Image (cartoon, rainbow, N blue to C red; front, side, top):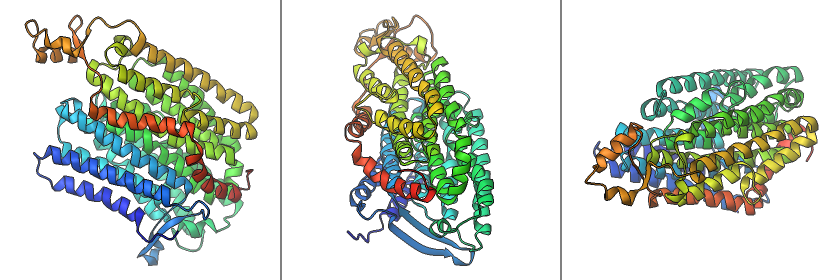
Length: 530
């Protein structure tokens, strides 16, 4: 099927146009800003779904390619295209941005942290600019634009966390930015080395892929690019920016941060490091694989020791991204298919988790596990949703997390049997801390300070509703805190995310067949096993 509509440019244009419209709206048109952001997210998801349906599985390769000469004298061309791996990531980004906008819309409406901070115009505009950068990375076939979109995705995080974040937000935003700029410096060095060493003076990824770079050159540059992208993927020991960034970011930003931004790092390793340096990959991956092993076990142990719910999810992300990197380092079809599927599954799962953390914090005014308890009685929907996310995190059969992790460990065991046994202990530790968190928050004894929201209305003679909120925010002991279940604007994105985790857990071939088209080409390039 030949389709001439420029889907990829349309996704970029819609996202940037949405940000521009929000910027020019009057300051007091908050509802229009939310609607514009929501419609933009919805259109980008619809276009991503259209690409997913129209992609010709029998043809494979890069499709929907668009090319416009930009600076031909420097070998720079606006060139976009999509293969099976990029297609899965586009779909993930469309899902996360729509659900993130819906969650943030409720936070502004409810007058929570976002509402207290205000400035929805700047918030939504920056959010859409960030997403445009993410979309651009997943579809770029020119390394100049690849790097340009990469920076466009990373830099807005500083403002999104520094302005609308919580806790040590300025420190977290600065730490995140410095670490990611360090990674960007490594990536830029690698791209420039490719540009000048090829002798072709081009940034065209398709052309550079056909160049047989000398083995010594590949062995020198591969670890530079691997580490550069690995920093964004949460690679140990460069991961420390990630938990602080997660913990300080508002819900929608955390969803994008863990859901898609960290995936840019893993995607960059696959697209640039593996595909352009196959000899370097075969030399270095058996050595670098020790780092993902540490990611998995250390991240899980750190998550188990946390008392703050957001830090639990943050360190869990470090551990799960280690599974992604382990699959990449396996250099075989099983491991790479599992790695990309894990990127998709983990992106949806963490988006669900951080949406739920925002919902829970908005009701209890705390993220400390020991200060919660028994919320399943007052918020049964949130309890069910969190449990589903937790079961996907520990890899329960019937969820996408099980299929993704199974493929990764199968591929990794084929390449590194002993190390895979060590990495598998992370699964056991994950089950321990996930079940512990679910029990503490939802199924322990009900915190006596928590009362149903309906009962709070009957206490007007003793406390005003404003006074109830005031003492709750201050964490004052002995005062009642009214707790309600999720509202419709929260339930819609949460149900979407839960449904996707279950859908692809029951029917994984729906997306793996697409991913495998891109993976097969990589494995052939590397000379690995199918």
